[in-house]
Image (cartoon, one colour):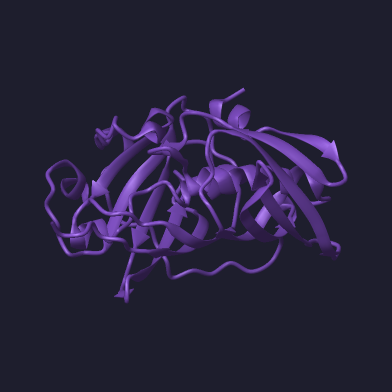
Length: 264
């Protein structure tokens, strides 16, 4: 079993409640990464519902999540032949930490037309890109992040004003990604506002929506993480994730606050 699969495992507690453990290896500082926390909720949905895969999942981050046990309470809202709608609350020591709504389906059974004008960026291959040296962040013990646009912002402190990071993403143990993994990878990259203001400050997530479009092929993922504006200290980031075959696997939009250090 891969590390990610083990560290997002849930167990039934009855009454549509699921228990999980927030493990080391997925934190930014002392706080669990928001995408990892969303994956815990996504796993609970997969176990609780009649449909196995996330199609769209939206979450509001009410409070930070620390190491230790969490409980996810799932409520089914309605169901059609191909889609089930549900909500979930994640609590830690009785305190609400995250509230989510979701639409789940079976990605293997989706049928219909295909069209896109979104293409993956032309970048070096995964094996030709260098892993980002950010050992001070615990989550990089679990994730292989190879930045192909914007690395100088993080390694040399140089801003470029682009509002964009592009990177290859993979598990350190080379585990193949699945639909639940996409929930985590959608929130694994540094905030693009670092390319504008520098790689410092605090950027707490308010809300994150992830839309899954296919089961990704085995191999690394290519992600583009873009912010187009900051308004009164609030920013949005749009993310596109392609699998190793160049097929769009997921999209995401995140709203977060930009908190800069106070001047001395």
